Amino acid sequence: MPKVEITIPEHLEMQITQMVEQGEFVNREEAIEELISTGLKAYKASGPMEDDQEPGLEDDGMMGHEDEYVF
Image (cartoon, rainbow, N blue to C red):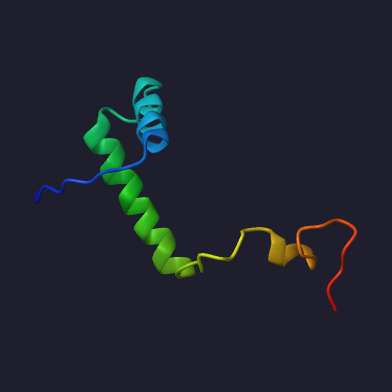
């Protein structure tokens, strides 16, 4: 299997470590492989999300404010 070296933000590293410690994965390598595989499947299914798009706001019909409607 090919090896890949990546640099990730500390908060992601902490989340992966926590999942391994909780027994969701046997080790870090398995966790990273499974999470990347799952992410790629989700990406293929839904396509790329634009950087300026915030998830959830488009479903509300509002611009992120409860009292502001856009027509």
